[in-house]
Length: 257
Image (tube, rainbow, N blue to C red; front, side, top):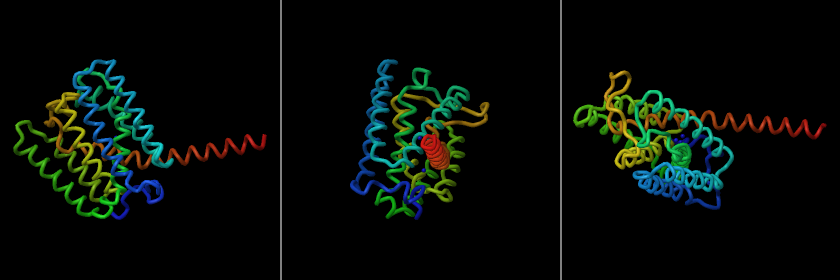
């Protein structure tokens, strides 16, 4: 459901807790393991099991958020809200992809929160900060190779993937938080490859009224998540400041009453 020298939204809002300098890499690893485990369980699950996976995903998200600052919590909340709305637009309205049980699985909204939080954590980790420029170049090169394969070689043509790759490349090269977008590239490519491989969701062969071919998954699908990350980066802090202003105003009115 985002960080070259400015390897995150701001140094103060995304700095890891001082007592746990290795937490960021561990958080990313936990999320990637849970993605694989949750999707493997979903592959043959009915609605009750899907809901149980959803509850477990919410529990994991809240547990990981305990180690984060208020700024990151608000960003994750924004990511969950925006991504959930996007799911209904892209899946239910535009039918670009469909989930196995033709519903919105209960684990999807908190799953977006986990992916966004993991992108923030990996972006501020010391290996990412130390090798920022190399990671940006590598991710763009890999994304370009996949996108070109999708339109020139793949048995299932993927014009949408190429367009989405251009979105990702724009965010990675010129965006406000390049390392978050690079981390999103890693996490969401992994997520989409696993999810489509086990059949949790399937992308339509064509979109935009049949004008665009689509891979399963589209090669540039991280571009969609980069848009989500950018919106969460912008709206999360704004919502946090609005909440603080409201709280101070309420407290002042209560004390003067």
